[in-house]
Length: 176
Image (tube, rainbow, N blue to C red; front, side, top):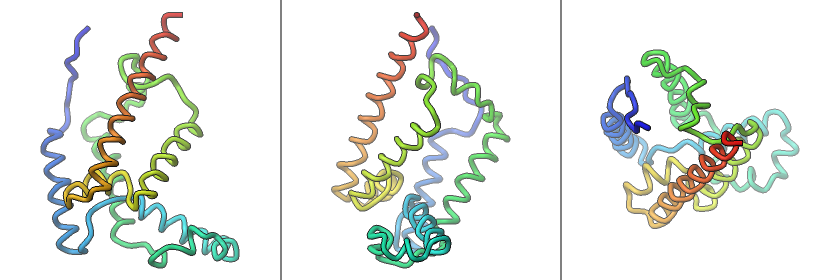
């Protein structure tokens, strides 16, 4: 079994350096590093206040926000990430979703609801540490924040263990 993977896009090191430069620019311009869960939280709070204002005003999580929800540069970052990912997939031929089902990569098929629940739990944990997954890993570690240096290795460690377990479960299913 070959472990060599064909890579047709730009170097991940180049992309990492570009993300680092983006983080430096964000610190210089906004006095804040890059992260996305704040934008998701702000968007959800903004939507809740527009769709169900009475419910939003009694929701402790929405009420406790330090700043009023708004569409800001972080919202543009999220939108740019989505559009940039789509553009990269089209440009470098990475839009073949069947690769996610490759037996050497990924987990057994899970429902979109289970995937969303897992993502929500990860984001909830990161928000408990007063940040987000990307904010802790990219910006918090760059600033030397203790919570980020605690959260990031735990996130990657648990993710690696779960991926390994999921691959083992998938191989067992395929052997049956």
